[in-house]
Length: 171
Image (cartoon, rainbow, N blue to C red; front, top):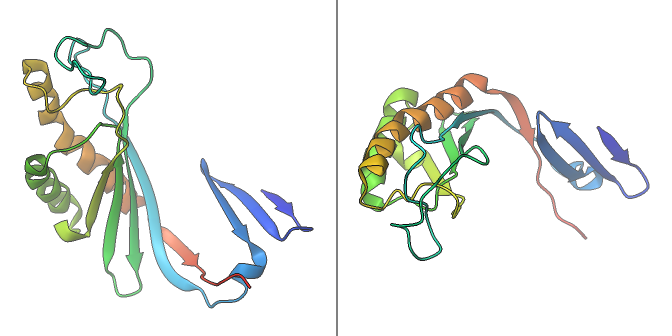
């Protein structure tokens, strides 16, 4: 925890997440009560030899090793009325609209969060599997993703704890 009193800013390391706020800004408003939780799951492919996303040739540009892990992360936010949203980030170049018709119901089934309250965002990495490529290894990998996405979402749901959010404006 770091506080810079002369400027009114505070920084807090909250379990790996850095939060920056202006204490004067926060004191202007009444808090909104809600609960929030975080979860993540590693989505590294079990097979290494598969097409990589981006940079043109996604058929012949194949992975040879894992240099850094790929993750799906989830933040679950539930308001005072019990309405929950899941904000999820996926270390993939993108997801097709067709794949969402499978992933969203799967996540919803295991969390109870309505599909329309689940937001999946891709980091658009060019160093991950090209899940749109026509390749047997990619097809096997895509079948692993729904359970991994659900795992991160379940962890986030189970991690929820009381939180407050403030709003305000600068003069």
